[in-house]
Image 1 (cartoon, chains in turn purple, yellow):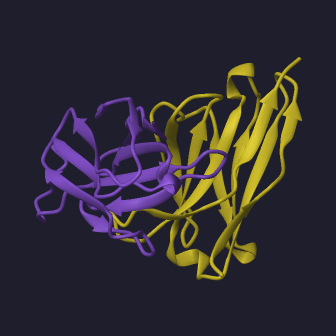
Image 2 (spheres, helix red, strand yellow; image 1 turned 60 degrees about the vertical axis):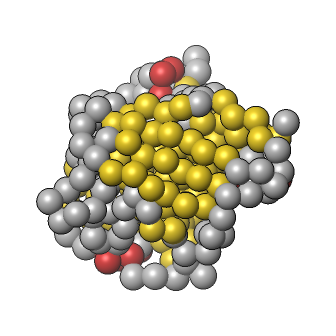
Length: 111
Length: 120
């Protein structure tokens, strides 16, 4: 099984400032086609999760461009260029290359 | 509007059976996979399994294989998650989500979730 880890697990943020979440996998998620099979999801309080990023760096439809995904192989990062109050919630990375598995989640809240 | 609408909250006793549903609308139900995701109280997300309603191709996470059954009725654009004998540890929120036909497209539409409570 592929194990996903995230850091930090808790991230207090200041509106207008950047934020970054790291995600690591126990095996490479880079496939032979050159794509990294990693998604990022945000679960806002009391809501269903929503897709932010797929294939490591592609923003889902309707996702603001302040969100970006990067990385390759086993190390991935989600960056928010300027945090807004509406960005609070729990962020999950998920590997989709093998039987999918989520990271433990990073809780983002306002300082 | 593309949406997945899940059945309502359930309260059951241990040992009872249960089937919850997820109805798709606003898109071609048979051209996307449906994923089921568990979220136990206060915990993270767990990928349970996936079904392609077009031909009922179904795969399970090893953690859930034999514990639940995923099915679909494409004639009514509905996917199901069922248990034959519930345990208290099945208490959780269950989400269905749509995934594109091509691996890697992400789960772009989610249902509102179904709360299942199993208690004697």
